[in-house]
Amino acid sequence: MKTKHTLNIAWLLLIFVFGASQTSIAQNKVITLSKVPASPEEFIQMRNNLSRTPEGGAAMFIAALLNLGKNEKLGMQCLTIGIDQSQVTQGNVYKGYKPRSNVMYHLKRLKRGGVRGNFWGYAAKAYLKGATHKNGYTPSKPYKVVTSRNKYSGSEAKGRVKVFVNVAGFRARPITLKRNDKGIWKAYEFSSMFLDVPKPGKKTDDL
Image 1 (cartoon, one colour):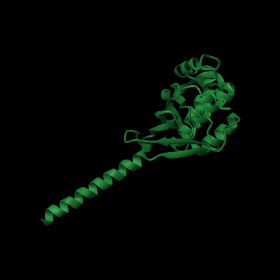
Image 2 (cartoon, one colour):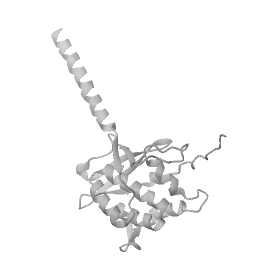
Image 3 (cartoon, one colour):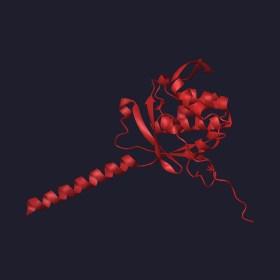
Image 4 (cartoon, helix red, strand yellow):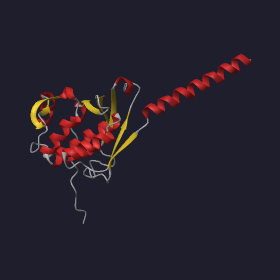
């Protein structure tokens, strides 16, 4: 009887520990963007502060997308700075580099002025807390990026981690980040971040 009671307690403890570990894995982490960088220098300054974690690196990738919607040249510079070295090649976007052709394919597909209009003008904001299709993707400031991990996200010790970024109206989208030799986490695999979102809802006059 005592043995059975002991086994029951051990089983309950195992369930508790396993459940707690699963909760911690799925726990959201919110990264605050105090501002949208207005220059490559500001982007680097913010990146050096925030991108010490994979979640911060993901948030800086979103910051680059936000700039694509405001100023294409600046956005391209920030994107070039924010992605892993394996995703850039020689070019004239920033200090002799530009995104590789696989990245440029998506950027050209979603280029400003197409059927989606200024796609990044609203799509990038869909990754910010409080933005919805109905409110025209207008989140309150300061902007916040909500991220999470799961048991398959990988290990920081190995220098490669997949995080999931909340997006309005959809399941959280994955972005994989790698840590460079300076301890900065940069976007390595991010094709899901180029998926479409609905255009902002039109405002109606109810008077």
